[in-house]
Image 1 (cartoon, rainbow, N blue to C red):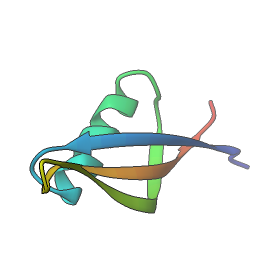
Image 2: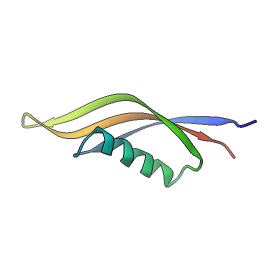
Image 3: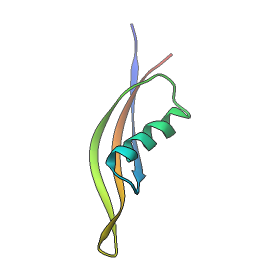
Image 4: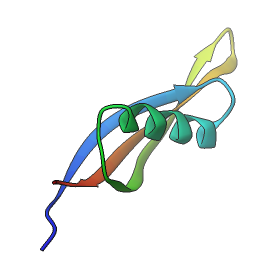
Length: 66
């Protein structure tokens, strides 16, 4: 029987929400093994001088414990 753990992370990208998700999963994968899924809990944008300067996502990342 597998046991999974869920962590919450926030990631950002100047290029869009999808790129922010990709960046978050890639960074989490540097220190966490066996990532199985991620849930986008929240979308946010950072605004500078009246324009969007960064797209941010809060992710719940699920991985299986060894």
